[in-house]
Image (cartoon, rainbow, N blue to C red; front, side, top):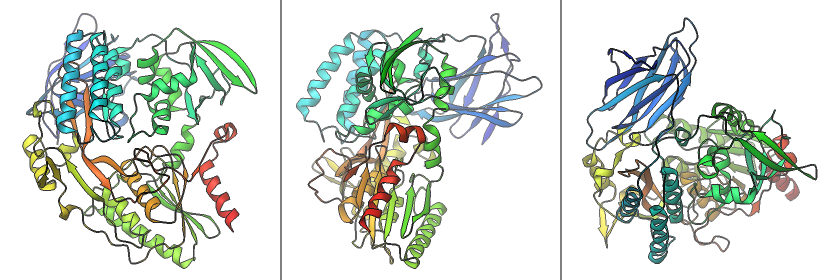
Length: 590
């Protein structure tokens, strides 16, 4: 349902148009016609909801934006109107606070934009840390899976001492991100209420290059800048590359103790915010780098945030990533007797009743018919970039690859029957999409799914975890599994089954998702009262249906039999080193 609210616009003395008084109900969308005929900053915020926005020009969408997760967060963007065009903003809520019936929304257009205030007293930071720990202890079934109570107590002692010395929300965010990552779950997240750039300077003080972590080497990833593409960055403003990798990794989370994802992802996803939280903005950047066997140094001025965004959105490595992720699933012939099944995500269907699920099943049937007809002996399962999704989809895939019955898990459980600390619970878009608008609906869902209480745990009902039989036709040739550090959740669960119960040779990098167990199934999100920081995690601890393997230690992701390392030339040429490796392996076995 879309609603239009027409309210009087007040022109302020400093050329700011302010629109107030909107009321936004769950499921509704606001439409706001922009008033400024000159370049302006648009700010949209609510104390009751986490908002997302879209900008339209003459009915054509220009941009979607959802920078922040938190209630009380701000969405803001800069636009330059063209004469004669009509600009409109659409505003909707991604989530609402518990018990909120409507959300009040304000829209402001302004010539200039100040940074957000990030100052709080140390007492408020400590209070939020105590709330954070209470949430984990009462709700998170994964808290003591990889860490003992003594270890958890120890890290919180350190965190409390650090929180007492915090001056800004960035200081506190650094503290709490470390604690979040220490638990060991790739489904954990803790994030600022507003995008980090909103707290940072509007001056041109941002890094004038982009970076890519290739096997522990930071390579320059931008074309048309004053450093050679592919040059190895040794240090920036005196901070060595290894230290940058290590400090950046603290903001990204993995199952158990897996490191590849944590060390690489920030350079692809966090350069617009977390890089500057950790290393700050600067008027000049002194960059030491290695190129063609020689060490060089250059001093470059900082650039504007908008120009850095453009650099990040046009970086050299992105073209290969976009090409690889273009289709959610596909089957391709890679050589005589060799096919590749590419699975880039399991989020294209919600479950077995979804028409997209039936379409996928038909695709897999056709795949098996093709492999059988052509007498294919080698099948590559390519999971790279697959961060997971619906369990029913990965189960469907595995039923075509195995001759043995299997289950989603040996068992799974929560540590509560009704959600505690409901006053801090955030009703997320996932809940809203499933008709859950308050804690009562959530508790009813939990009771239906985790209905077997025993010894302080609430177990997933047996009827929800049935035995899954192999498909009538299954592939019986040689399997090869391509996996990288991004493989998580349902995708790493599939990788675990493939490695555990088939003849697959696993090639690539250790996955971020665990081999033996993980926290998954159902995410909850809570908000800290003083900072507005939101923290979330999956509440169900899952013991996977995976057998013990000597090369798989507890706390690891799926470890490859053959690790792939990318050369500088492969980076420059954007060569698919993973596919190259598996095809060489198949060729040498003939």
